[in-house]
Image (cartoon, rainbow, N blue to C red; front, side):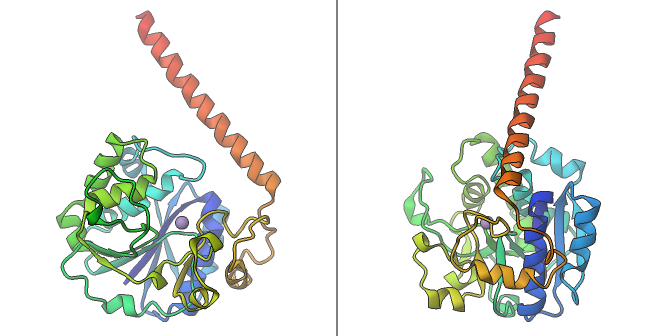
Length: 288
Ligand SMILES: [Mn+2]
């Protein structure tokens, strides 16, 4: 089984901790670990390379062609371009068959993933955990899954060209509430295997999980404030910190509110500059 996630530099630590948790708790010594990176720094690469020891991580880059494919899709501070890696990976792994376990970087594996290596996928493109959001404008009986854990049948996904269908839908529906997740749900419809909650469990109090459920969850998902921020108070955060202490990030200070504020400002400036660039191009065209 291939296990992959997709991150930019900001989420590199989370990806490293996730992969470490796969190595120590995943019970899948034969797994192949892949990180699809969007402009990772040299430092990120060095840290990630050692993060999953004794397993090794292969880093792939979100190249020009990938960027072109997702160029029309919406992004924000919380939804960077890297989230679309899950739509691209099955095509990037063209020629490979079998299954890909795609995981959000803000997850930690606590117990064995071995069950997912043999779980029956019933000739469907993926398996995922059903979620509560039913805001899509379609027959509610179709249901809705969360995109944090995706157990993908690579050949079935490519046969149905799920990646293209999701990208096309989202480029026509740029104001979707949950961009990658809504798009995948539209592309897949009813055709997925429903996984139990233990494969994608949010420990947040408002998501209603009990402490016993959190302890038993095979994969916990830190939706909301990310656990590498100093200000994170999410329940179960110690699960993240315990694994982090075994990674190259163990002596790195947690992300302060100041650096988070700087990130936000940089993002706003980036947006403003690209808006100015567009206006400038339009003005020049009008002068012609
Ligand atoms: Mn997530």
